[in-house]
Length: 334
Ligand code: PEP
Ligand code: MN
Image: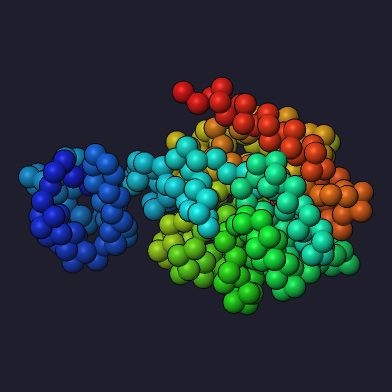
């Protein structure tokens, strides 16, 4: 249930109403917008007297929220959420360009790629340290050493770092990571999501291989219900019957999620297609349909990459793409 307050309500009256609602065993999510305050009531609201609340002098309107996701629901929070990742804003008109290799392979590799993507206009560096590989015999990532190398690349370039966490036991290693990624395979690792909810740190939540948008939002809800509201969603393609591309990029998810949630939404055309030459057209399409950013794999030597070389752009290809992305952004800006 949401309660929209009238403009200019006195703080004291507002606090009284919140206390009264809390006394009924409800959690209250307060969204203080420029023009209106929205109170989101979390918990079992079946016994709450809607008519009584609507009759209060300070209340403008009361609505039931039928969707199971509350905190991330746009009805709870009409304005776009802006997530701050180490000084880089994402959402609410702020576009992020995350780029870097699938996996961190060496100091030389990550620093060199970080420099070239920064020169091309990227404002965050990605790089997997813990890799969720389908085969246990494939490269599993440099793990803790990989995170240390990402920090060196950050120091060299000033780019905030993005890397994937695979389990709760690794949390201490992620203390100094700017944006913690939850990969597709862990989108419903509920224990992990609950722990991330306690952190108050930016989280990049990728859509699972075969998950609906509602399930993605329910996973975001797990993080937000714990008190961490800094969540960025990522559409990265889903499993369908077609196998020419690695996954099927569901771009309609972007405008659909835009309606449903206030959280920023970014697109990953690399894992969605699995084919480097398809990355630029899908990145441009993702930009055109209103994404708040792109996460793209870039490698200085894709032929010898330890992971996902086939979908990695070379730095010069990324630079050419970044330039076109900026031009699309200018066209769609009103
Ligand atoms: C990744 O970004 O490195 C990755 C493994 O992506 P996903 O979880 O979307 O497959
Ligand atoms: Mn990859």
